[in-house]
Length: 61
Image 1 (cartoon, helix red, strand yellow):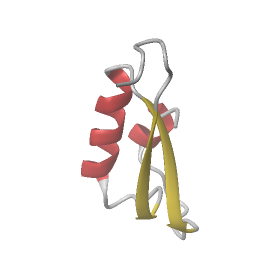
Image 2 (cartoon, one colour; image 1 turned 30 degrees about the vertical axis):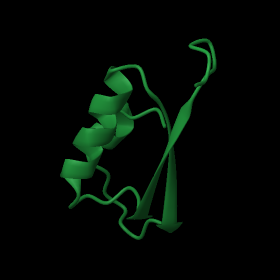
Image 3 (tube, helix red, strand yellow; image 1 turned 180 degrees about the vertical axis):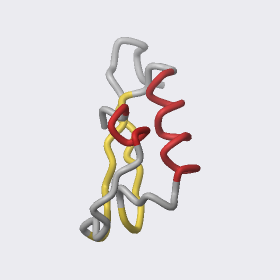
């Protein structure tokens, strides 16, 4: 078991990020961040959409 002082980071792997049509994933990421989790987002593809949902701007990962 790791000591409680060890920092942990969670990697989220998605096909493409950010995507305007996938607000569900953005909501989940934002909720995890609001709970204090340290996240890192890994996108398998570069974003192709120019429009970004305002929720994506609130995500720090």
